[in-house]
Length: 258
Length: 248
Ligand code: SF4
Ligand code: FES
View 1 (cartoon, each protein chain N blue to C red):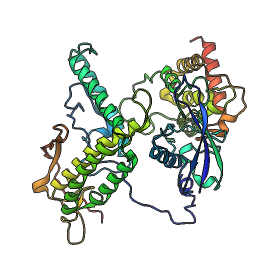
View 2 (view 1 turned 60 degrees about the vertical axis):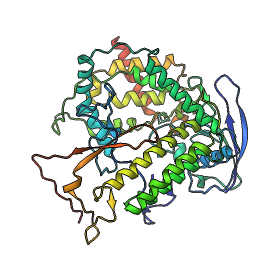
View 3 (view 1 turned 180 degrees about the horizontal axis):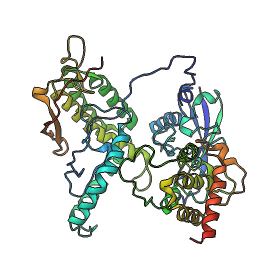
View 4 (view 1 turned 90 degrees about the vertical axis):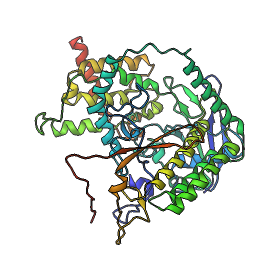
């Protein structure tokens, strides 16, 4: 596989290894049954925050998908179905109509901008910004810069993006632009959370918080919590809820990779 | 490098399609075929035209979404390689490359190079689920599986469901795909309980979907990105025959 991608034989030339963005940490808030704040909406695998906090290594997607799918959901979803009476949902419900109208408005808004920049170019600019300011090592100044720049970029997206085609059939640029629109919101939250967490832990390395020999310095006194951010609507600041990490049997300790 | 592309463009299943010519400029040989198309699409979009629609997801050869007929061969004709793992270093500066969608009655075109492969999903669904409750993690040797069976099952399980086997086959037969899916489960003890039912139902669904029958030309094996062996078709025929005889 490596040879196919690079055209180099790893037996003869040293392998080239570089860091790449894999997953973002966290995920949607769920309870112990893996149900989100919306009754009946269960979130399994990578999409929920339950098993991975500040650290998340490759292949853990499989672990979480299997773990949630084998050990949790078969019991909790079934229980939900038998214990709650669900009326047949109707497409004429006011909420349904509203959701439909919202999506239609969102789609036609994207299609009508007809600006100068492609969704890819805006996506790349956002990606580069995050890579530099909220990448493997971050600091307060950089995060603040990113938090200033992202809303500007988002504004530019909504003023100057070019999405061709129509909304009726398959339209991959529209689909892509919709995702970039989401990234524009999510990127801001990512930086905000990284700014708030004034410690280094797991994949979050704040340059200000390191031991004299350059290792991550955790602060369990003040930051032993999972941050659950509540969405307040577009262009409104999200609200943070702290979920303290309380351990009864084990004690928190710092892992050493040395 | 610079290339000329002849790409199949089609608005939807009801509108006739045609080849359009595009120039791919400044392509880096280390790009994958799909990354090359991304570059071309950026160009098209910058001109305010609609980009070429094509399927992809993982781009590392494991999901089966990419599905391009490149110069007449599904996935481009490099051994054991999906379109996304086909790199531009295989082409020469100045080449003209033809790109078409999968062509088979059971895979109707949705747009440009994107086809509807839900027929495969329906075949998988027809196979049903494994009813044996395997419970928690069993003891290491509680469920003996001979190494040869485990290996064979793994080989079958490597099928990513891309549909290249159908696209290349003159009969548009899906037998390599169905054989891989049936064998993967039928070879293991957990899958044995539904062995007969699985073979009958999946083959039945395959016929319903309008795929052709196998005349053992072997072109499927040649283009399969996962090099699924033709011998699985023989195994499927045997499982199917045995189930028929038992009348289940
Ligand atoms: S058998 Fe090979 S070509 Fe056919 S669907 Fe599976 S991976 Fe694709
Ligand atoms: S994009 Fe997943 S196999 Fe090619």
